[in-house]
Image 1 (tube, rainbow, N blue to C red):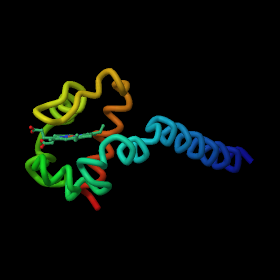
Image 2: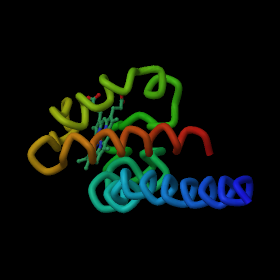
Image 3: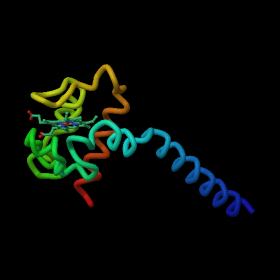
Image 4: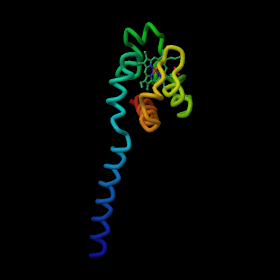
Length: 108
Ligand code: HEC
């Protein structure tokens, strides 16, 4: 009986935890597609017309991925060269979800 209850609560906890994890990243893929893909491409490769003209680096490349989360957050937040600043448009949480999303693109 106790054992059954424990398993049931573990399952409940697991479901709750996955819901929270999902909610904690509010649509990073959508934000990326809407605000970033025009230059960086939907896959981060930067193979768009604008991306090529601006010579953006492939976000999946080692040169980009070797930078720390803080470095990447700073570029998104403050901008760099032709990269627009997003600190007035996106929250700190949105920006860190985007960095996590960029890390995910590299693993595909
Ligand atoms: C108008 C085109 C444009 C848009 C839109 C844009 N970027 Fe960029 N991004 C650039 C350019 C150009 C650079 C290279 C800046 C440099 O190094 O001079 C860059 C650099 C970066 C880098 C650092 C990569 C490196 O080369 O080290 C990250 C991370 C990044 N962008 C993420 C984003 C995210 C996330 C968004 C959407 C919120 C976004 N960018 C939207 C043009 C853009």
